[in-house]
Length: 158
Image (cartoon, rainbow, N blue to C red):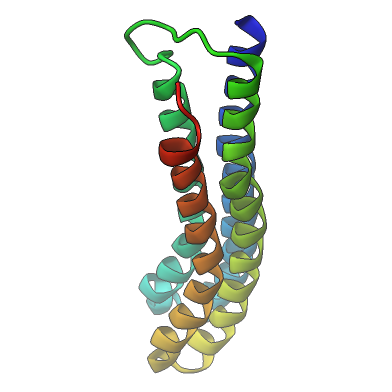
């Protein structure tokens, strides 16, 4: 029983940790580029902030997945479930799509957002286009979250 719970907790930790790291990296990359834009034109703060905030969502997705895993095994109130090692591995692997997808998409969304800062620096009307380009990368974090949710709700019975 303890090994199963440990595997589930490890999966939850990976989901929030890796997806959060992707967001932190992405927001950091975008923030560096945004600082350069703001040094030239502080009035563009609103546009820069929008682009910097876009990579932050992966961390939220990872948190949602971790919360659901911990809830599923009863660690967030209620009775802790007696889960087998196989169920623990199932929960661990269910966390991987958002963990890996969140890490990589957050990182690369930050790069695309940073490039979008260049568009915003030259023409404020380019914000919408820059947002669309950045949001395209987010699609893969959303897909990772959806697969994680499908596995949690349809694939692993506890």
